Length: 104
Image (cartoon, rainbow, N blue to C red; front, side, top):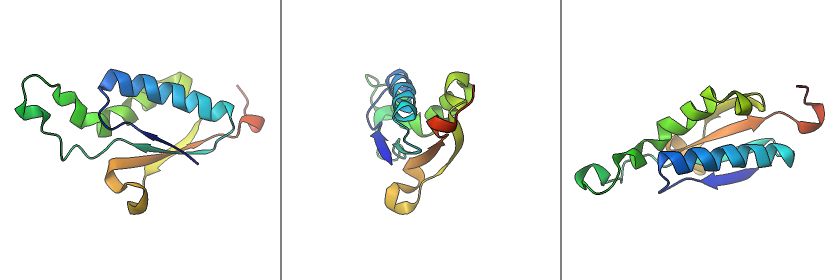
């Protein structure tokens, strides 16, 4: 199991990081990833006009980015919500295909 924490990332940073992370994990034959996005509850960004309110929506944007990215979905078996001890609704799991059994 490998873990990536995207707290504080912008949407663009998070998307780039998750894309590289999934590829790296697949290459290393990691089959389970924990992605921590945070719940967006503590984010006060909406009240601050100088910060992007996008920071609070990684919980939704990251899974959507993965789902729409065919170069990533071909490695993925499924994504599921994380258990409470792994972050609950502020995290999710990605189960990757076994690299050794992978067929294009």
